[in-house]
Length: 314
Ligand code: ADP
Ligand code: MG
Image (cartoon, rainbow, N blue to C red):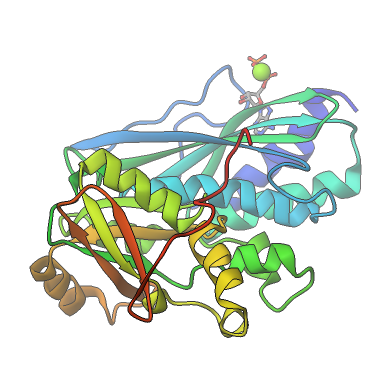
């Protein structure tokens, strides 16, 4: 099958099916570029993430999950800025053309796009030895409102969404009850948008909470104190030894939850407005300090995480 038939069969058709009219581009798949009209008063927010088979997901991951996850991890980056997602571009490198695989993969892409009201507006299709899925995501933010990593202030609360460490647990325990957290991450777009005007800094947790929080701290030139026992975890993790618990929760990665800082006053006001609105529940896990170090406490004892997070070139 030629490149063009693949595009037509698996991606062009998928686009029109998954389209929500509010999110549509002026020109989608089929020309040299897509064309989109930016909404007034908005800035373009863009990111790209590449998933390599055997590196970012196990080789036996289902095609459907690979499709979903490669979209979700990019939408998670948009969520971390407080942005509204608009569209994605898909660069796909395939070792071979298998109808069953492509059908499931494009179904996973379509379902994630539909769930978050995002349109596939273009891409590129090539052959290579290793399956590689690279997605560029585009979104909008009201001018000047993007939530950066660099805004944390001394005294701000440190807050995380959802439960942390589940995906790392699932990776170590194949077919566990937490498998879906690894295969089908849920980007926190609604929560991220609700925090615009409230949070002082934000990041999505992709490489381990300790490492990703570290990015906020160094960008903001501040430190932190974290109460490890307050970090919300699934029941499965509560059974682990303390050391395994720390590894999954602080250094695990693949959580795709949000970690943000917010002043106590803003937090109260945000809670009054949004805590009952259906966004993912959030939990305070610590506070920003002046001293530029991150201290972790567990049962009143200071602990040192062994490994701070996922290293791409380790
Ligand atoms: P060009 O040679 O100009 O780069 P291509 O032949 O690569 O064009 O692509 C033709 C059209 O199909 C373009 O609109 C491109 O965005 C789209 N396209 C190619 N591959 C994909 C894909 N994997 N997913 C979505 N759209 C794709
Ligand atoms: Mg091309």
